[in-house]
Length: 439
Image (cartoon, rainbow, N blue to C red):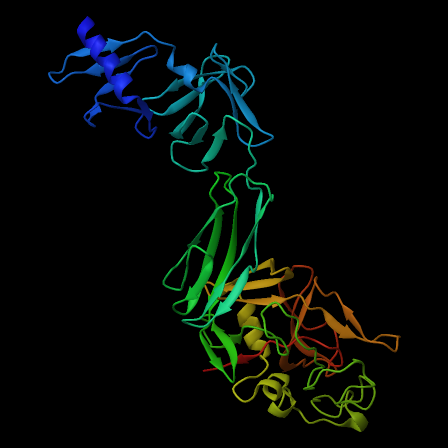
């Protein structure tokens, strides 16, 4: 046995002890092959070619390999003491099983309460986490600064097939020890991303680009990518898989990006203006009870006027007038369909720093963003006001409200709520317009 002990010692001296913790220790012989062994609390057991074994030891208990303070960051640490105690939890003790790669923590009653798997270990670093491989973290022998946040240059981008755009990531803090990040796509068939954050669209649809820290902090940031369903007159639309087949524009009339507010229009008018009240409204004679067009009730018409028009004509449709034929303002029924929880979900969120609603199809995952652009109105003042921008959204329909001709249906979300309302403001106020088309 003495000869074999000496042989084992020589193996250690010649080859050294290398640690790869998914499998525990590996000991390499001088010829490059791996010596077969197992671990005990105070010794290593080697196996020779005919299956007999020899103990090498005793030596310092294997727990001593992790004795000392391990830092999760500059501010968090875990200390393992030689007597088996740890400050991981008050009164806790631990045992390290290197051949399994496990640290088992015990309560004061000696009942095990947690297991951490050591996935990698060097003299100065451990990568640990639950046995299922989730939520890995880095522990170091010296304090180090983990990444605390990642901010992307954009959180939503709209691309055409074969178009590309680069995302940039700002990693904080600036003195993070390892600021490197990785990029992944949730669906490369829709869009892929390379190692520098350049996103390339492949096919219609929606996917998520994720930028993740590589230092074990678990910090990440996401960007939604919408690949256009199509374009008409230079304006993009998205197919939300709605039963009617209605296709919704990706941005407001007067805007070039989904998060931009765009222009404001009084109902039935086709150009923005500086003052929104009845004195400047095109289709009345100065008041809410003197309509000169789109009137079904004589008590709202000028001198008893009615024309029984309940839907905007194309010449008075802000979407058609500004974007051309093929585009129009949505009807009341199309707004109800968009808001129907059977077909879509909606989330109060921010897109590139702008608050609004992200509306996502339940059938195909495509989405549109409606910024909370507020509305324009003049009350007792001679100047125009933009109300509730960043809080509420108001989007005209093409449909007249049948129980009061001075009003029209709109899609509204108020302070994050989602729904359609027909009672907020009259036709003279300035609302946003999101255009639609029907294939």
